[in-house]
Image (cartoon, rainbow, N blue to C red; front, side, top):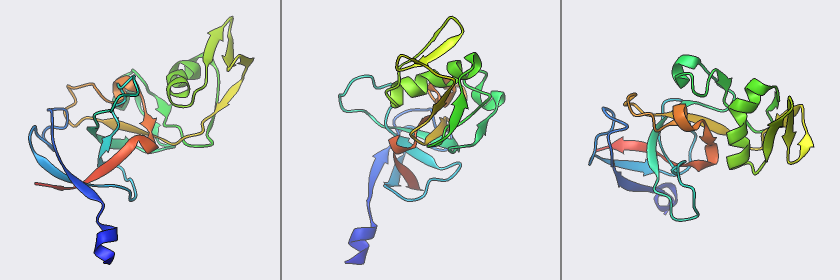
Length: 170
């Protein structure tokens, strides 16, 4: 009976080349839901490109940085980094550089409206010198570095968007 409660997984099939060579198109994997997320885990995340409330197709990515980790310019290819991957309760000052790094996260995932006007940042219509994140985020990357459909392009994703992680590759 205990085994029935322990096993919470599913078999998926790799659908693209973004995780090659670790995971190739058509390869089957066993994923498990829950558990502790670690650096370099290959995870299944809700597709960050999904813009509607329609059923999202999850995608595989490698978890490169955890909440509170620093992302270097080299890791981020000058698009997102250098920056710190936000963690719940982390406060950042809202100078223009940080506004540019974090505004999309705050607006997309935290329902905050950030604007920069006349050298002043506003959050939900009020002048703000800082912003405190409410969620933990992870920086995910493809193993196939030529494919940029990962956090190098769309930034970190909320940790709670991680659906599962790969436990076994067939």
